[in-house]
Amino acid sequence: MFNLTGRTALVTGAGQNIGAGIARALGAMGANVLVNDLRTDRADEIVEELRSNGVTALSTVFDVTDRLAIDRAVAAHGPIDVLVNNAGNGGAETMLPKRFVDTNPADWRGPMQVNTDGVLHCCHAVLPTMVERGHGRIITISSAAGTHGVGLGFVPYSVGKGGSLSLMRSLALEHGRDGITANSVALGIMDSVRIETARALTQTVPAGRLGSPDDVGSLCAYLASDEAAWITGQTIGLNGGSFTS
Ligand SMILES: NC(=O)c1ccc[n+]([C@@H]2O[C@H](COP(=O)([O-])OP(=O)(O)OC[C@H]3O[C@@H](n4cnc5c(N)ncnc54)[C@H](O)[C@@H]3O)[C@@H](O)[C@H]2O)c1
Image 1: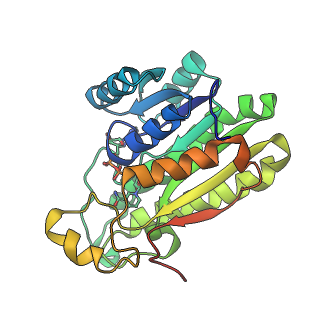
Image 2: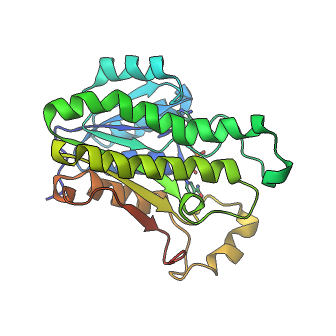
């Protein structure tokens, strides 16, 4: 059960943190892992780590908003069996909180480009061969900011995450009969939060701890497996019991 031997998995933004956790989990299940990141140093470091653990891994550096670069990577390393759209947050930029009313339209593009357009492009680039081969797994790492909203000044991010949630639902409907599943994982509060706020935030989580890259990796490993063939079009909350409504 849960064996990905012979499958090629592309994990975007896998050069650190959550994406690296996903790459480790898929690699541990036998997948050949394509480690994408904007930054060569980050992707190379994770590839080296995976290889030292016996995983077949390759670095593939591109920006998920750059369609030509995605197409080149897919042509070089595909066909892709498993796509994990993990690159997100503010993309190359740090997200700074600002109430929506105080933003300029120009502030919206960055977070929306990486969290929605990047997911659209990566899906569109890998889908043709998934359809042709009658199999595929698409997983998008989303957020409670997409499912529930967030009142901390990150509206464009929230909208970007919401857009990709809708995309997964529609792809699930359009490709259900092609052997392709498309799901979102909506994360709660993760252990990468600033250390000063970690204790207070932990107290709000029913499970009593923050989420880790390993938690995300385990769920992705399951969703990527053949055994998860009947789970599609879902937004799965991975949050230690927070955000239940
Ligand atoms: N960390 C959290 O608390 C949290 C909570 C909810 C959802 N998420 C989501 O989880 C995912 C991973 O988050 P993280 O905290 O591990 O992020 P991170 O910022 O720590 O790492 C993201 C990686 O993606 C790369 N990247 C950024 N933009 C890219 C692009 N355009 N193309 C290719 N690579 C790119 C970065 O270089 C970086 O190495 C994101 O989609 C994020 O929105 C995170």
